[in-house]
Length: 339
Image (cartoon, rainbow, N blue to C red; front, top):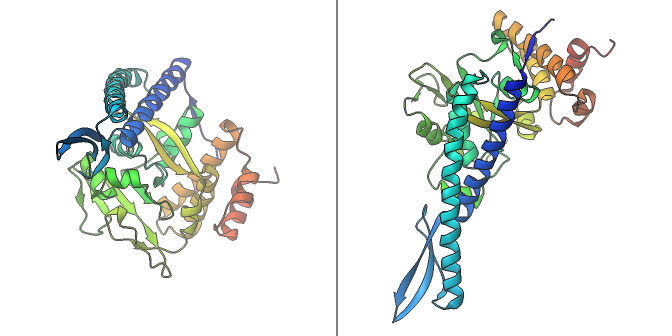
């Protein structure tokens, strides 16, 4: 199969690299703020003595840091000084990101669906990158961005986005405090309040632009533990154990609105194997079967031409839980080891 990859121009590469550096800087500051400065400090008077307290802004829980003396005064002053400086730096980063959005659109490297970018920017800001991943055709946006190319439009995503909640990834205490009552469903609604639950499935949501987002938390018959983070009914799905153990692949993408976000998906080799298997064994619709098989070949070609650090055979040897038959079929029919 012949595929055409349109490479970034020098100006587009420069714009992407600058955007990535600035977005990384912003995220580092935001995550630091969430971790260290989601509190306020103050003095509480008890029996004629003052005590320094620290209160979490999200949970309102208070912790005493000791009576007022030189040590606690230093803690109080240092905390507020650093918090003020970081807030000012964050404001500056956000202003730079706004300028970059215009440049991204001007240089025409902004083309990922806005819903996807807006959702994952929030995921990035909350530090949930390894908990929430994209599966399906939208993964290809990450692969093409890594390579600095544009995949032909006919191979890219339709109006559906599959979001996978990794059961094996636990949420840290910091995030739990930051999101004491939030779920992946509520984060989606915060990003776009026009999303409504589909009548056909409780895990499917549709917005005013007919964009479909499916929040998937698979369970097997043997799994009794519960993961309520998705905020929807968990699905009993066989054959997806490999998704929880898959090697993650994270890349910054740029939305049609010019905004940046890192999306996390699966290793491109596993994606290619999965798409071949899906096209051969799961699809009844002929057009979808052909689309999946073509995507498998396309990503394989992209790896071979633009990802020199990935050794496909070496990656295959590291894969866990995927069907051996699926791997062998991919090797013989897509990878063409005899060439």
